[in-house]
Length: 60
Image 1: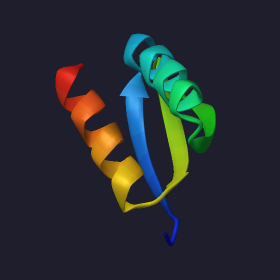
Image 2: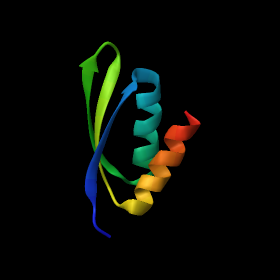
Image 3: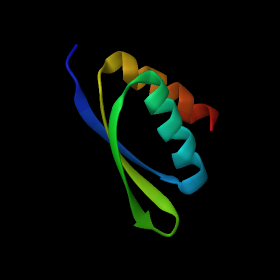
Image 4: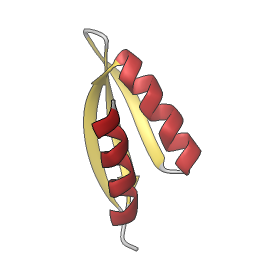
């Protein structure tokens, strides 16, 4: 499946949860702090992994 980059910004507590989920799923990502207690994510994933991430973010 073709992979492409997606991005988002989350507050620190939610960012830590997303990092754990991405590591658990083996999804490649980079993150960096953007100030005001937010973290920016660049996530490389395919369509199936987008679904996993979307479902996870909806539960936060």
